[in-house]
Length: 223
Ligand SMILES: C[S@@+](CC[C@H](N)C(=O)[O-])C[C@H]1O[C@@H](n2cnc3c(N)ncnc32)[C@H](O)[C@@H]1O
Image 1 (cartoon, rainbow, N blue to C red):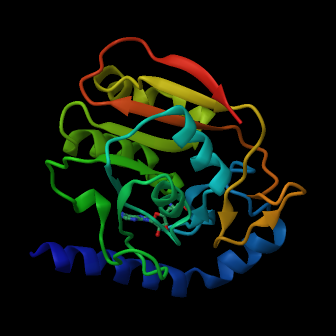
Image 2 (image 1 turned 90 degrees about the vertical axis):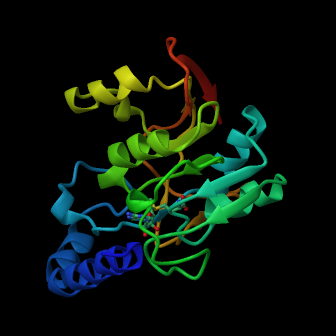
């Protein structure tokens, strides 16, 4: 089967899921927080290919703390909230997504992307696929390249990530001092300072890996 067919079949599954799950989702949105991770919803309660946009301030802060190589891949770009900030900082950004959200190249399943990738990878991956995204990103980038992912602080815990962290320990984890919230469907609120953000019950972090790093992770803070 060609890569294109595999990618399209993932989109078809997404459309089918949306159709059959509308009723459940209507209930869900009436009764629960919609902010990313604000409660411990099960996978079935969330959209399969969930879209929660990253507040631009989070990426600005990352760019002020870390230097990346000139060419960056944002493999699940959504509406480009991370990509646009990276471009503002002068990076060449290749943006793609499984779903067509009007930005970047659609119908690209990142988990089917084959390496080697001679770029750094920066994204906020879909919540339910976060571990797979991190693992795959580190498998396909070439040695020395960075992978930066916006993840919950609780990504650090759990038996299921032992193998991942044994093989690929993060180099630095930047913990957000103030709460940042990702916006479902990119619908942010504006803060008093003019930034876009959402109320959030989640502590987000930028996890930064450098392929080939084998020491202990360092903890720092941002925001
Ligand atoms: C949490 S949103 C983040 C969007 C964007 N990175 C941002 O930070 O604003 C996750 C995105 O991953 C996309 N996605 C889900 N599964 C994917 C896959 N297998 N390959 C590529 N993109 C995927 C969704 O369509 C969604 O746009």
